Image (cartoon, rainbow, N blue to C red; front, side, top):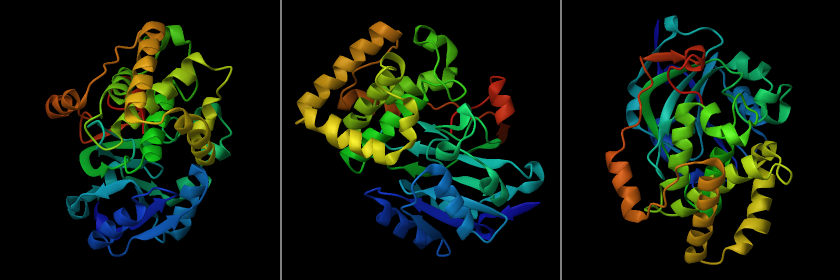
Length: 314
């Protein structure tokens, strides 16, 4: 049974994103029935607030840093191919580094799954502490229907990179032996970690995203006595850390570039990560030539991912 997107409630979820109002206004021009949940702390609580606003059995979530492409609203979902507990995930294209995967992309949730799940700040398992992807049953779609615009301010760009630098360093939602990081993390996550750490200086605040990714990877793998990776789920902690630790120590772009390079050298030497210091032209070249790997087939389940097919990070 194919159901058009216009049959689902759409909830736009915002917290403190500087481009949230603009992106929501853009969404309303394409989906006037869209609702908005704003300022709810915690990813689990935020999604439950969205579910409370939804009146349909399945509902669609749009992250506040997303611009949804118009063709999304002409698409249909074949629900006969989807389980009652499956979350449907579309990839988003990241404006900073050109990556296309589940991070920041559009999701279609069964309402009862959101109401019953316990993730992030409500997690009861280690795997669910900082991400949905390890405990939620995803069906991954090939289509790209949104652009992830997470570079509207230095904080937003740094936070986006930092969170991915942490999460791309995890396996099953937990840390691993840093000496075996390259061998243990999913190959696609290894590749994405390198891109987050290397690409983006050609766009506004892109260097902040690169620095954030390197710092997140560095702290998660090499400074575990000083950093609890679970803090990455806490936006208050992230804002406080950026304002009190990160930003005061970096006063200009050249200093930011130097600190980014210093972290790159450490990650190259200690973790054997093949990070590159791409300048603006190098970043543009990468994004114009890099081909993101497809999610194999029109629908890929997370169980297939764990067997080595498709993505494994949302």
